[in-house]
Length: 120
Image (cartoon, rainbow, N blue to C red; front, side, top):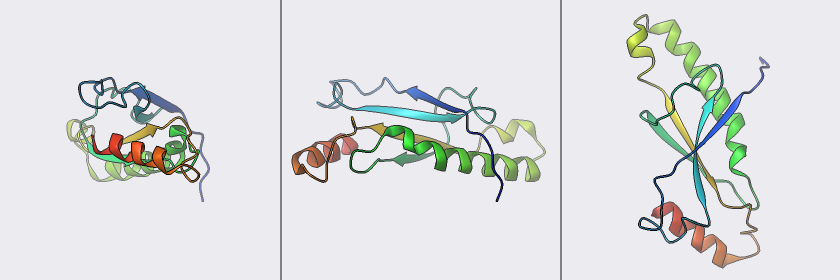
């Protein structure tokens, strides 16, 4: 098991406004980028992965899985792809929802609102 430091970068996605969802002022969507691996890539263009935190969870919980996956994929990519142009064009885009750490286990209506936001 290798240990490494994580360098999280959370980029708020501004494309979700009230014209797209009625919950735009309540919830947020962030794109995660791992420092030292892909922090220079400010726009999403790769395989999307959506992280939805559970009861009272934070959007920042995506950090551990995204950092590990980004580093593992970066290591495999550089080992197999020698063309530096192709290396930056494949990978994962980890998105995470900021659901205001709501207690959805205790309040079903909040869970319904969150599900509607995800589907919008």
